[in-house]
Length: 186
Image 1 (cartoon, rainbow, N blue to C red):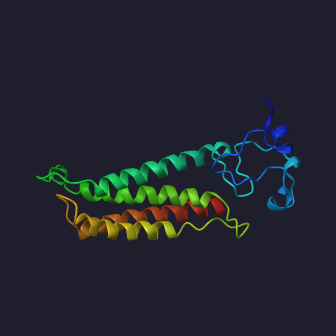
Image 2: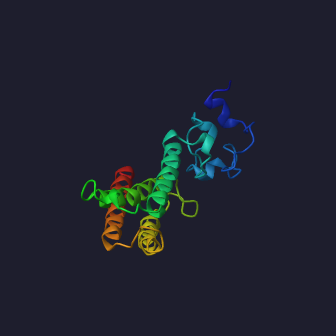
Image 3: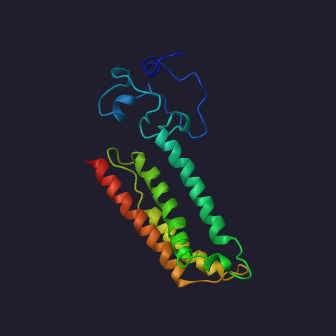
């Protein structure tokens, strides 16, 4: 078994994963790492190098963010587009629970995907984080579109209150992302 320090200076022996962009740790690393070469410091294989995320070599946090993003989007899609029940009991059990559910279903994927995008540096502008701000806009637009589509789903109907809850969840996620990125920048 090789140590992380031995891996840095040698080319990878395993085939690149489907997410790998073909960038080797030893190739032209001095331009991407601010003048340091990859062999000048011991680098853990779990560190994202040069802005390329390789899922197998990504930090544990990035892996979890990918999993949480996928799960959050799937929960949102099932929750928003599944048919309702004829008697509408799901919204009568606890008053306001429907709106909290909408805020969470739209806020969670916004936060996880936004955090995942802001984790990796921009490839086009070195030194800057990726732009995550389109994510809240996309989920807010999806909230409006989902309410229109719900008019065509059995036992569901469009509701401005649901859209408002969607937007509240997205705004809370955006504020948390702003705070997270400012904290990381300082």
